[in-house]
Amino acid sequence: MDCRDSALFTGVDEASCENMLRCFSAYEQRFSAGQTILTCGEQQDMIGVLLSGSAALLRLHADGNRTVLESMDEGSVFGEELAFTGFRDGSALIECREDCRVIFMRYDQITKRCENACACHSQVVTNLFQLLSKKSLHLSRRIEVLACRSIREKLLWNLEKEIPHGTAVVIEKMKTRDNGMLDIDATIFCEKETHKRIIIGKNGSMLKKISTFARQDIERFFDCRVFLQTWVKVKEDWRNRAQILQNFGYDEKNFD
Image (cartoon, rainbow, N blue to C red; front, side, top):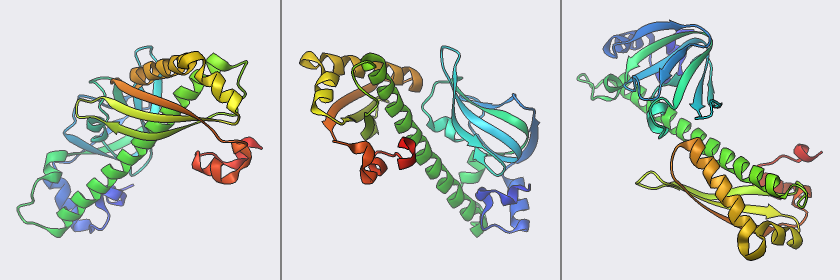
């Protein structure tokens, strides 16, 4: 693969692409499977384009576990997402999965104002910010999925014998404060009023317990303080209603 095939260079002709690569101080590097390409806190002034092979953005946990936040294949652009994850240095990295060829470019050379004010340079900057926007949306959705999973796991662990698997969790709102705290509003849906009372517990004790364990889990995963608010609502027979399944992010075949 040629780097011109990457989405970063969409709309740029071959001659202009070669000129800009020199302007961006581009260089190629090879990595073997299992080798670290970039680590959070290192080389965040570089943008990488995967020319061949595959890689993954990984979140590293204190207990030694690792979670894949994004899988990458030929043409993928990476590097700047490490600066936007909010993770501490060394807590996220990009790892080579299959032998890789990567071309690196200086981020500040791409985003600075071009002396020639060429249209192709402006196109690359536009492409870059479109890619970053898509990555931001992808990571936000990933956070929602992981937060929902954590809350539902705590539900099942604490109420396994009392509540059937007819519960769903929906993130109603998620926002990061200026101080880095993550606000999450979540709703737990169940199918019966009796289930709702069990989930809430006496004086709200069970819901508080579930929310506390889920909050601690999310804080460990995302390495930030979390303010989690949870509510419980009844949606009767929701697993058999296609529109509700779709609203909850499920597919009918999940319940065949």
